[in-house]
Image (cartoon, rainbow, N blue to C red):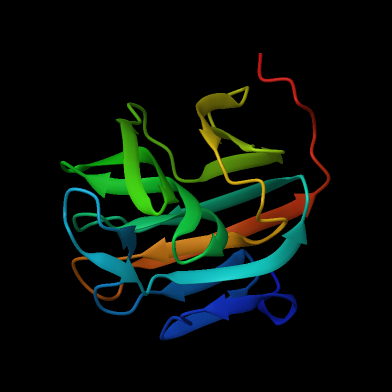
Length: 193
């Protein structure tokens, strides 16, 4: 479904967001990010996150694109309980290339990333919550099947979380992202193979 910001809520609204025929176009504020402590030592909770609340298990899917140009420009999907418990996944620009990136934060943040070695315009991510786990998948328009990126622990005591598009630009302002389609529904399956 097309993203309707009237049916969702911004955490840290961006300076620009506009719904158009092909999706929600948005532009980032200066030095925005979500990160808690690890390695870099800083704590940031000022990224842009458009979400709706969801209780229990679910599958969320998001299709998005972006104009990645500067270090750490990023867009994707977030699952958030609070400032110290969240997951974000999607594309992050690092080492001069687009990487599929996953950050899981349980008090402190961790980061995994791998380079996507083919050209693409749009990325799709799928996150399924089942109990204490988030199953994270991705694909581009040239890929026939979803690929697994990560199976991550997520505290099951948080029964309700925010879910939706996220984007940040830690080194600048003006990163442009487009969120084309978003769905949030009952979990598809527990099967990961």
